[in-house]
Amino acid sequence: AGAPVTVTVTGAAGQIGYALLFRIASGHLLGPDVPVRLRLLEVPQAVKAAEGTAMELDDCAFPLLTGIDIHDDATAAFDGVNVALLVGARPRGAGMERGDLLSANGGIFGPQGAAINAGAAQDVRVLVVGNPANTNAWIAAQHAPDVPKDRFTAMTRLDHNRAVAQLAARTGAGVEDIARLTIWGNHSATQYPDLSHATVRGTPALEVVDDEAWVRDTFIPTVAKRGAAIIEARGASSAASAANAALDHVRTWVTGTPADDWTSAGVVSDGSYGVPEGLISSFPVIARDGELSIVPDLEIDDFSRARIDASVAELVEERDAVRALGLV
Ligand code: NAI
Image (cartoon, rainbow, N blue to C red; front, top):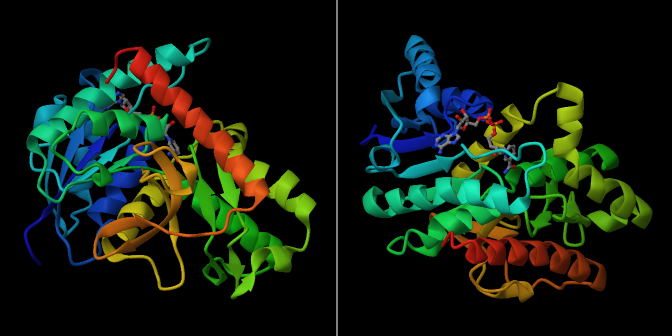
């Protein structure tokens, strides 16, 4: 085994943190041969709970886990970080306006971006899970001028995985038979889960499904509103599935997408597909040699065009609101 990889997890005492840390420490983030050093960042009032989680991590005696540090200070937490998982965020409270939500999160992700800029390792990779994930990732990136913008990503892998599972269930295929599915836009109810390039055992998914109404009226809303359905059923928001998606996102980034397939991730736009340059929007993404790139030259039909534009318009509004609030 080589030198340990430093993984910083924010919101470590939260429910996603609890579902995530044990799997990171058991090798599900970077593989069974890579030792990890964990840095947990929490707000001061949750540090004690994070210490309790660290005690349990110790009690697992994970061979790959070489150390755990707990911080309530971002600068220390991101010192030397290779993989930064930004999970902790300010949730939308009852009656909270969007401006308040963006301000509260700007106050978290701005300083965290600056701390990453100050102390991260050269190869740092950042995944923002905390909502509004795309805009939080954008804010963090704006505060990290020395870190290449393509190192800042936002999580839409949970939406991607949900869409794969829904299509597999509908077609009776295995999840491993599904390829080239895409989540476009914002990680929000406006996201566009796109089957127009997807395949089921190599056959176009839309041919296999052969039911436009199902795609429009069942598949898309089921995927886009799945988070709310989980809350309704479980009495708490998605946690284990979100943690699983975060592991998938980073592992895919590092180890690559399979030939003839891609994944979905919120990445900085290069202007492709009419998405304004610089926005962090979900795209079909290929990972190769540790780098992410947007799948080029896909044909976008009118239905897809309208759905992508609607979600991207929301991202533009969020970005403009953040600028108007002076958060970047
Ligand atoms: P939670 O409320 O259980 O935990 C959040 C934790 O973050 C708390 O322990 C809190 O103390 C901590 N925190 C708050 N501000 C912090 C700061 N400045 N620095 C460090 N820690 C801080 O929430 P849960 O369920 O773990 O979800 C976390 C976030 O992930 C939420 O924003 C949620 O909306 C988002 N999420 C995103 C998904 C996605 O697909 N992108 C899927 C599911 C959840």
